[in-house]
Amino acid sequence: MASVSSAHLVLFIAAILVSAAVAGTVTESASRVGSAVEADSDLESQRVDADVRIVSDADSPTAVYDDSSETLTLYVKNVGGRTLPSKPDDVPVLVNGNYQSDVQTTVLDGDAWRPGTLLELSVNVTLADGAETRVVVTPTGARDLFVFTTPG
Image (tube, rainbow, N blue to C red; front, side):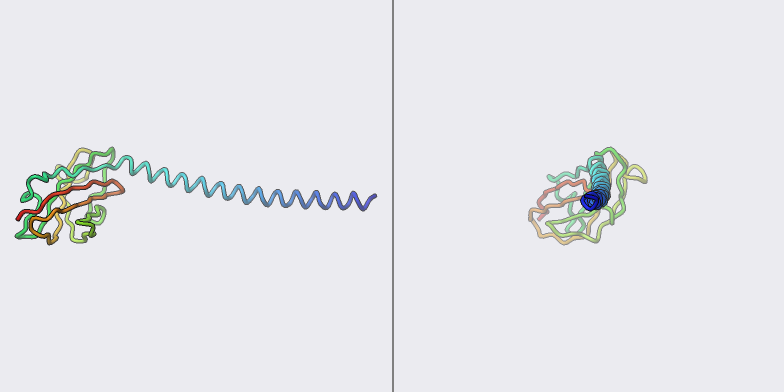
C-alpha cells in the first residue's frame, strides 16, 4: 500500500514539474507575441500618420519633365499628421516600376517636411517622348501614384 502512495506521489510531482515547464514556455511565447504585436501596431500607427499627395499638374507635362535635361520634377505635399523624413534616401521613387537612385529633394517653406508643406523631388531619368509615365513616391510607407504623358 505504501508503494502505491509512493508511486502516486512520484507521478504527482512529475505532473507538477511538467505543468510548470509548459506554463513557462507558454508565458514566454505569449510575451514574444505581445512584443511583436506592439511593434507592428507602432509601425502601423506611423503609416497612418504618414500620408502624401503628388500635387504636380499631369496636364502640364513640360512642367513635370524637361526632356533636354532629362529631369523629372514633382511636388509632393505632406498631408499626414507628422513630420516626414525628406532626405533623398528616405523618399523612394519608382518611375515605371524602376527604383530611382539619382533623386534630389528640397523642402519648400522651411527645413523640415512638416504637415501641409511641399517637397520638391528632382529625378534624373530618361523617358520616351509621348509615353505614359507612372511615378510612385513612397516615404515611410505612405504612397501616391502620379500618371502623366511625357511631352513630345
